[in-house]
Image (cartoon, rainbow, N blue to C red; front, side, top):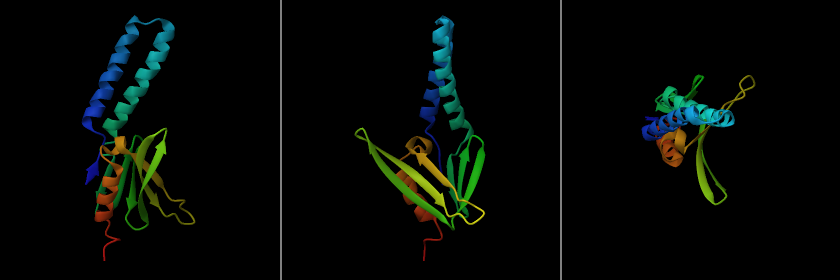
Length: 138
């Protein structure tokens, strides 16, 4: 199983970033700096969505998480899957937390992914991961 940002959101980011970049032709110098930084930020987010696909993949030997700088494999033994729900300014947000137990030489890893990273509700992903985890089955 694998999860990635929704394609429509990535296309929207590319479109907005290109529109901002094109608007640089008609702006004054101060506007070019601000809008140029905004365009760069939006295009970097779109590039992350394209390069780090799939963002999360689960298989029989564990979970693979991809980022812009590479990936990380998290084996099932020692992996804890949690969903954290927060409420800020009246808006509820959920994140998927993948936590590994570290040893004396390994501090462990904490990976936090949101709805946008996964393309779906983090609680659904957590249920699917728990169902795939061979260490929790009898």
